[in-house]
Image (cartoon, rainbow, N blue to C red; front, side):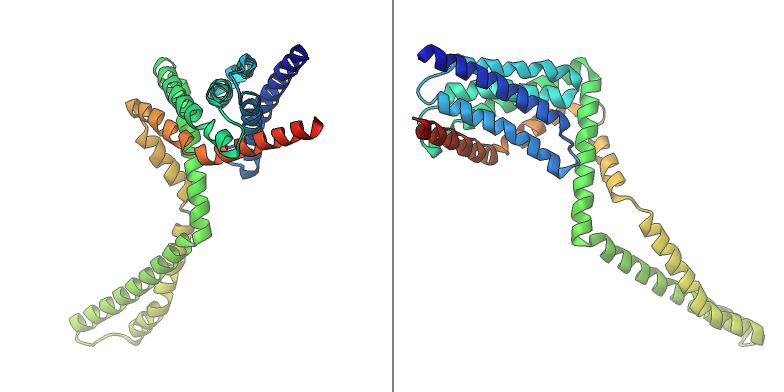
Length: 277
């Protein structure tokens, strides 16, 4: 019976690992809904935490099957490392059968995996600059898209555009009036009626034309492109290595979410197992 259970654990580990990595192939950093594919990773972790509640399970090494997708791109390589090392660490540090125990089972694994990811990125970016370039482009593009989304939601651009066009109109109106006054003083109020009419028309037409041009200029500004270029310039050249600790911190920052999802998964596995007995 134990041998049959061992085979079952190996089969489930293998299947969940392949399912998790293959699903993440469809992850699009710019598509919020595609992040749902990552839910299969805490599902795998939850199963591993449950079967490893008493002792380490060697079947957790089967998760390294995810590395077969690593050659596809940098994103898949990173996810393969997360799945492989994270799953083994979860099995090693899992201890207990409560929700809190399952939650804590991913604390150290995520810390160690984040360090491994940072080291792998640093090593890869040093030997193969195209890896660092790919990650830099993804980080800059994602940052730009999210910044643009926040700006659109808060209406900051609309407020700035309104203030800018109002300022341009007020400035152009004051300029026309000042020009009219200067010419009138220089000529001793001896202006032709046609010139006076032209100045009166300019008070209305010139500010309107300047305002329209200001609106066109502000609408042509692409905030996302500016942010993307700024992030790319920040990590230009040798500065790309600073992405390594940034990636580690960002990854470990997901610990509360991953811990809760893993615990929910493990408790669900426990409930199913108890009900089948």
